[in-house]
Image (cartoon, rainbow, N blue to C red; front, side, top):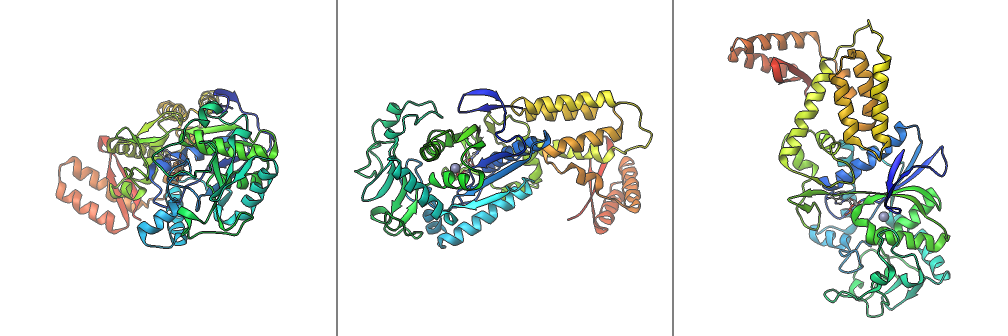
Length: 465
Ligand code: AMP
Ligand code: ZN
């Protein structure tokens, strides 16, 4: 399999450290507000990567953090803690805010059939590990302490900037004038490992004891500490949005490599944004839609997943209601085709043809993860002259990657009685007897089924939820 590696800026052959177990770390959500469909794009892409690795025969250990402290409104340590801000806005405790938005996040990812990580770890439950790591960095001469915080000194880490390709001298240049900055901070790019509960953070509600006084960790140290705890020093793949490249991931590298003295991550995998009106969909800009908004438009959450399958992860995707409605229709069409495919027992000889679809599907995945191309192969296969059984077999196999729950459709048993009523209704519609067709629809609904009219006088039956 070939993957684009942000570190080398090249598409590289993927070689895991341990061929029998791929280690994968994902930067998780900051749970101070609703996870929106921009986040869902990020986590669907992650899920597709994980499912692809599994499809290609790897075992995967996947860890994701939950940021529940220390992420300030400015990624460069400026502003206030997002969690404290969320608590003020909702007039709840920080802990209530964390619980509510973490639950909302997983409710959304479950609805999109995103497999849960093997380990989900909250920053606030790993304060001890973070303190230990800061101590090691201090022993290695990479930190300094002011009245306000403990900082990582980037001037002591010569390769700082290697992920984003910015030189260290560029990163050290002038401080911002418009926001509060600790007057004792040495370099602009130095970042806090530990904030003391003084000055602007004197009222910070989450705080712990540490060798540097009461306080709370900076945002970046959590990922270095938890990734090392659960996956070891050197890991295969680390994922996140492209916004994490210049600060968060650069800082994770400095912290982790500052402790272990060797390469931390072999493949950095970054996905591009979901946009709306040419701007990044984001909590801070307030231009976001949640999964509830999607449901309010009577759109199946899985249609969002289907929409995300249609763009390559390194490309920007633009969200419009028109595009999601088209995706909803596309998914329904796919389901209708499946419902119509009746496996027959007299299978003809066609293994060569089906193998070529499988091969092309695998090639698309192995080529930096071309999911849109893999989807096109699936559609082509459905339109081919393979037998119904073969088509279903292949499609359900491909759906191990797509994750659209396509097999659920065909497993749904519709009783004969309902099918008969639906056929009668079809006839009534054909004869333009609409009062009769309405009456039959009501009867079908009353028996616990919904009926949807498709093109060419076809219909689809489903159990009502
Ligand atoms: P946050 O909760 O802001 O820390 O973000 C969690 C993850 O979602 C990060 O990897 C972000 O890069 C990603 N993310 C946030 N907004 C978007 C968006 N509009 N499109 C795609 N990914 C996003
Ligand atoms: Zn992270």
